[in-house]
Image (cartoon, rainbow, N blue to C red):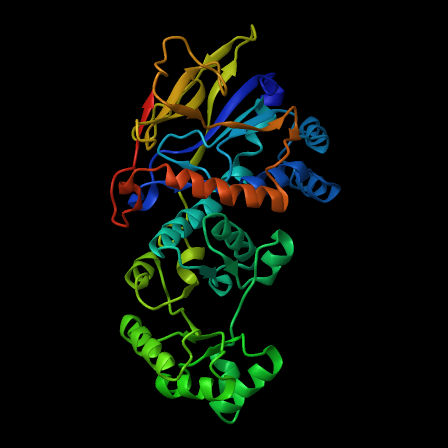
Length: 425
């Protein structure tokens, strides 16, 4: 496309692209934006080096003029978007890119690959966090996805309410709190369960978490307290009928005097099993496979479409795709979230007009509302506060605040319609 547009003279037309989801995949009631900080960092580093240019030259499908243009590529446009941690709904312009056509179209795959995956994890994590009723959750899914996706998933889950990750690279890269427990292999390595517990306590102290279900759970709990004493930090359960087993373990710990020893559970948890255990004596959860694959919805179906461009006179022209079931809404847009008198979100109001920050004439904005889109990149410069550990902390806080604005129906785990409606004006 860039090659042809450069040849035809249209590559440098000012253009506006939108990234959005036509619907909420998986019948979710709301989506959570995640990956924005990673995307902004990626855009800053998005370059065609000699290695890429040499390969493209060898493939011989681009003109030399296009290769020269790619060699000098830098994104110099503007990007507005829903800040990371924000919630979104069908049609929400999660990202709005204004630049030349050539500059903006090159970002399509980069933006979609990051935001689709990270937002899927964050949306699942948000549902799990609510289902846990305030009890902490740790992300433990690195072994269930690719090595790079594992780090990104830990970041997205943390933004959406998880409290820690077992992925040390995520801790190193993003400052996310890390945690972990011993695996069954550690117990099986030793001649007895008691020997394994003694080795772990000797190395890590009594505040550690002992895995008690390698052989027999009741005996494992008794051995754990015998070795560590009643100040043992926690026991982990990874098998069995969890609601029943958890109650039995809590009673046993209390009877042994270990009233402050906590119980953490793992074993293929998702938002539904977390919800079923939220009011049991479980103290914390470790979630693996389900969270890193979006709990059955590994991508959110986001698309990246051209919605406006300038004509030969430099005036903006709205453009839209009309394909059956895949139509888009053309035009430059701004977004206001409208609230009812109690402060609950009611409508996602998408205003057609002058673009982000605009307020078209005739729009009824008498109800309480707030602007959703924020500037992320201005004239090619990433704005402060959206990247690094500070960006993650802000996103995490923002997510808590935005979810609290939603009506109670948003928290239902059943498939259904979006929690609020989307309207265009």
